[in-house]
Amino acid sequence: MEKTIKYTTNPPENFDQLLALYESLGWNSLGLTGDELELMCKQSWYAMYAFDEQQLVGMGRVVSDGVITGVICGVCVLPSYQSTGIGKEMLNRIIHHCEQNRVIPQLMCVEHLEAYYETLGFKKFTIGMTRSINR
Image (cartoon, rainbow, N blue to C red):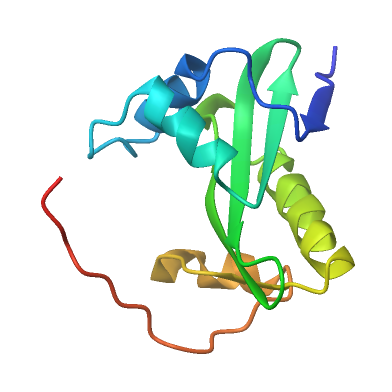
């Protein structure tokens, strides 16, 4: 039987699910808590979640001024659900939301994902830089 994925802007009841998703991807090098991830999502301009019944299987969000640009970040899918179209569907919905609000969607990614994002209409435009801080 094929799984039906529900896409929603309604967050999970328990952000420990997002913590488990991040940890399954090796994304929690900062040692974030479920409460911090909840705050991160709630302070985002837009967030999209994917559920298989009650289980959170994907998530993505946009940090934005709501006027000019929106940076898509944190797009992730539980490893056992990857390569099934969930990430692409979330990105299409996120892009659609940005376009409806006349906000230019942008993102940063690792080099090996450039070709994937190009299939969604993104084009390389600059070099990203970061600065480490003590947390």
